[in-house]
Image (cartoon, rainbow over all chains, first blue to last red):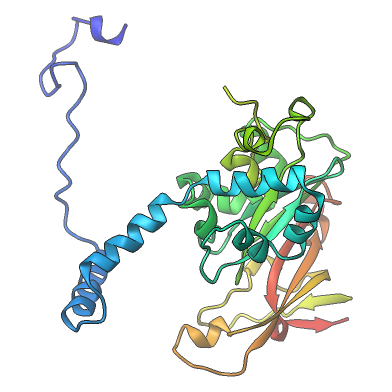
Length: 216
Length: 85
């Protein structure tokens, strides 16, 4: 019961006993200043409006892993769609109505013999136009460097221990392609509808650091 | 087809990871023509380059340190970084 301790001072703590978060009043970084300057110039010169910029931010924020989950769920129930997805994942995603812009997407199929894992060692390339923003750990130096050197150890830290006989394929997103993993459909989900199946497909299972999970 | 990644270390915006330079892999698929990031980064518009996916065995990259030599890494590399062997 962390709030029942009375052997320490509550000075500097909120009434509920939590430390106040310091104000975010540090100086702007070089790149933050550059972003503000560029944005204000584009608006002043009439190339963009503030409303258009915020509409784009809202559009990106509205994208989420549930979009990718719907794509994977359809691949699980519809073999023709799965073949189309593996041949051209961009076209297949667009055919479901997702606006993924100019993104070039490749779908990677997990099997009983092969497990796929996605990383971008050079920066943080991620299929944002389908799945939304990446998790913070995906952008960390630790994940980016370790995923190519010791992927099995990294996966085990995510709670996923793969059998030795299974091949791990690490996909380094080095250039123009983006990647989505199509996980193996769990036996416990057989017979469910496409909509029910989508609830099994987690963000992590589409990056390759997890497996589909039964909905809670 | 087997290829070796050139072991060049030029300055600039290079999208060929250092850990793959000098390593030998198999072409997994050819993706098509794309702008060369080494030129795009400096607002140059040269000829487009072929982008290919290359598959490398872990023991080719990391040697005895590899967790499991038969595991693989696949990466997109521009054709001008690859030489046939």
